[in-house]
Image 1 (spheres, rainbow, N blue to C red):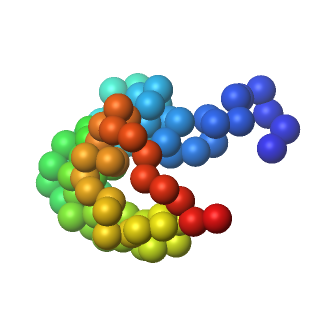
Image 2: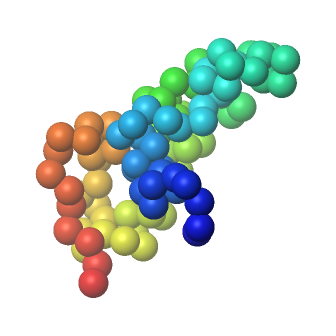
Length: 94
């Protein structure tokens, strides 16, 4: 990608660490004429960053698939690994 953004800006993790995930709560605050409510599209909860990453039941379904694809021990992934960037990373597949 040849853009002025840092390479990491194209990943969910980089955006999460820098609090730049384009969730509905954030979009509603800046462009309310397009996003008329801050709630998640899958449930009535406000779409905060924590909700976007691990709070929504629909979005939680994605994490086991990601873990299976990239982690050496997929069952070791917990919500804390997703929510807290200070937890040591889990070993990945080669």
